[in-house]
Length: 542
Image 1 (tube, rainbow, N blue to C red):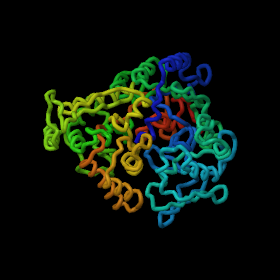
Image 2 (image 1 turned 30 degrees about the vertical axis):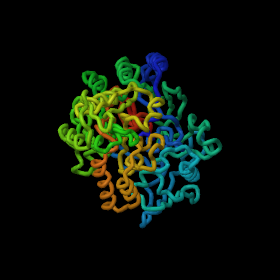
Image 3 (image 1 turned 120 degrees about the vertical axis):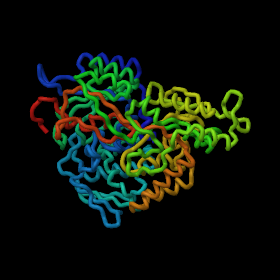
Image 4 (image 1 turned 180 degrees about the horizontal axis):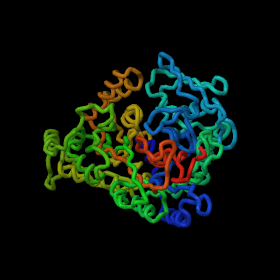
């Protein structure tokens, strides 16, 4: 879950935000000349990555802007060729994927892109010495080899149905990254890629700046300068958007609502797999008790959270799979049933104490719940969760902190966490629930361990038979009803407010994709900013 994202929650300091605000106020978008159309954009994002190296996880889900993968996703989340000239050829047994590469592609330093760069990238990610928390996502990959300069062949150890979706992984240049320490070298912050933009500066906690790559194989972008302002605080992001410091920003529903009457801006809603959940650490004597877990699953009022916290911009969550996904196991919805929650606790020996908090064998039904400082959505979810739990006799104490404060406490303390990855159910569930990933950074934060779930996750990953895979992930979801190691709360739509001065090609208007939890550099209406052009600017050069 959070290995892909929560580490990206580096805070923007107030001083840094103020400095960037001043710079943005002086010229927030830039112009293409006196009276000419603006050709720059400043967007406000909540998080920044830890690294810009694909070898360490950046760009693994596509849309990195600095890099390209062999494939990419279009607006409808369908795979399309990128560095590959076409979709792969797959052998009848599902074990061999052959990619023909696009000719004439160069990295931003002018060096040619070749098959050896693809081989280098995948082999380096798989190397145990590489600090990539998502290595298990390529568990099926047995070998990758180059055949000449324009063909790459992947051989799998077992048929892995969503493998082609894994090849949106951004490709790194061997001639740069291969000559330095993969974990600590300058490439981690000074990347060289084939993408539509080139990084020109990165002030941690403040901003990332990019220039259009004039030699981009897809055509030079019309937006010549892109600034991503890192603004952790939701209220500050909204204020700066209203002041004209930003051209666009991601905002929580309550703050996005405030721009509805502004005719100069448009709000875009992206449906997502992004969920908010409470980790229930196995090593906590209260949260690790199955009866407590089941009771909390019934005590929480998910629909009220959607209505009041999200203002309808989302849906109740009963697991990592959204209810409108074809992979959702029908019948696993949990109704709000406070009486049922109390009955479970009574039968398990958790009896109300003098103050209403339940006690069993001298242990009070109490535990702390941490949430990320400055994240209003997480704060509101945490407070609502604590209120619902208290009605069942469970005392949950909410506390705010940075990830540096929270991470050392995750083994025993609950966390209001986020996660979610579109597409195949393996993408999110394996890292979230597999027992042997417990304690592996932000993978399996609850240290959840259930043999039935482990077996089903392996079965779903190791077959390409649709019926067998559906049965496996159905098993996972139904087992989470019996033993919920997390209390899933909501799936959150992402809302973006953007100055209404941009079109995109082809199609004319801006759009959003179905998004993962991790939204920022590559998500939002700027997922295809290389295709943006100023309104009424005439024909694009692309």
